[in-house]
Image (cartoon, rainbow, N blue to C red; front, side):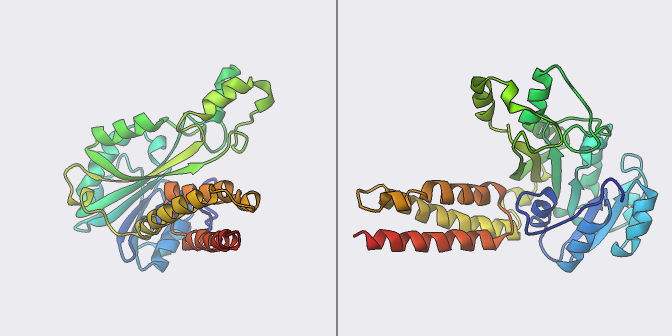
Length: 310
């Protein structure tokens, strides 16, 4: 199996490709840069998208050629995308775990502007070098490349959040949507023994805003684009509206749960249960409407408990 084969499960809310696909409007013209095994392209076709591709690996490209309207085999840093795809302009360009492998990601982003539709945007995923697992390894005096993940041995560039912002700024792009794939420090490809570190250090590290961010998944458009003031209404955006509505209702329920009553212990789980579910939906903005339905179901259950205590 090729190294970058993607086993894609759209029900997985903590996966960069699921998050990326949720940010592509159905029926879009999409350029998939770095197609891997073509799984993302095949999934987008089911969403009525027309998909073009760029892939450096000839074997991967040949295996997925039928998925794409046109598939360019070559190094995205060397090819002329405007020349390769003629008059085609794309609504969305996907750069999923690609830019960290390039010598000059800024140059590539600048040239991608030439093939974007005036209302087009890019969807990018990038690993976070500031993840706690990397920091803890360094504190032990180690820096070990791995076969994949945060310290993939083929990475030429490393990004924390500020570096992501700087990259976009240099290339003339502005971010307008951000999600995060999160992993606990003990749940990455980097071996970490938390017992080897003082609890005070671990607590301080946990307070860092990106300590568990494994990947950034973002949407960005050229500076000055109308998209920045009128973002596309993707499935992810639709869910965000639902989550915002739920946020108000959850706040009201928490206030009710804090009132004196005989069943506070029973309903006290509202903080742990709903806060985690709601914040995951709010932060990741995924397409999983089932998550919203789950929150609504639990809120109805809690209302029943509250009513029974009156």
